[in-house]
Length: 228
Length: 125
Image 1: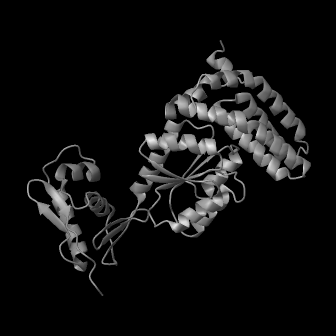
Image 2: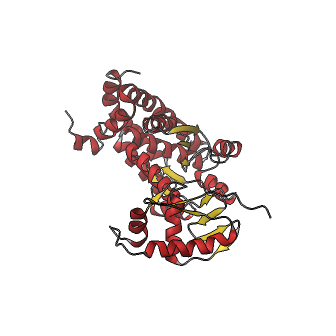
Image 3: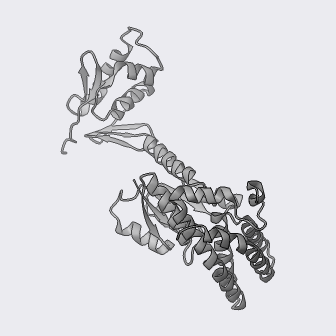
């Protein structure tokens, strides 16, 4: 994991870098907002997992950095870590699109935990692409080979559970627990019926996607998007 | 010996919990570096803020007062942090005069120096 720390105070940079490295997080530091934006622009997408952002710096501010990042359509997680502590400023930061807002002084163990929590939330809501299948989690939208697939809520949850397996077998027990909230296999064919319906809807747009693994469960099979 | 709660209230000592927080991240060596930096930079920031006020650059003076607040918070200099915060709040509320806030911070720093020096002598850098 790698974070970009945009912070003008050398002492805070020093101790934050130590704390993050202890937690296995690599830190790249910028002393100014302008340098932070330069580092972001020069980096390949995905280079940084998160930005830790001070507000008050010489020159441009942390507000300016967040604004520019979001205006470019970059959804990288941003956490303000700042001495600006008023309610208006905290609300402003979050409404501008920050994922969290921490007021100094911070407990560095908490800072690490906040970073992990933000990244966990993002992962849970990140779109999933598996071969020609795509799930947009915030919109609960499914496409296969770029064609929309309309699913019932239960079918969607079932496909999501399979997609999170990323090609690994997902056991019947896991699917019954995660999708139907059943702590045990009731011995009915409810799962098989829904798998059948899913196959019918998904396989209109490509080769068979869901494979039965006898005695274990189901897994998704990766197929590349058909060329149009 | 100052109690932890006594440290927290500011006065003439650094907050033991804040120092422990720093020590946990990088041991006595990191703590020593941070205390030395606070010792050196606080007078520089105060002087910079005074120069900015003299040059009618209120934004720069406020930025330096904000830096004083952040660095004081980092090493647990609670009284300096409170004074800098008050100055920021007063400035936002429209109080034109910031020089007396700098005087108060300077006096507080002078009171803190014996504890700071004692701690500096006891830490590697």
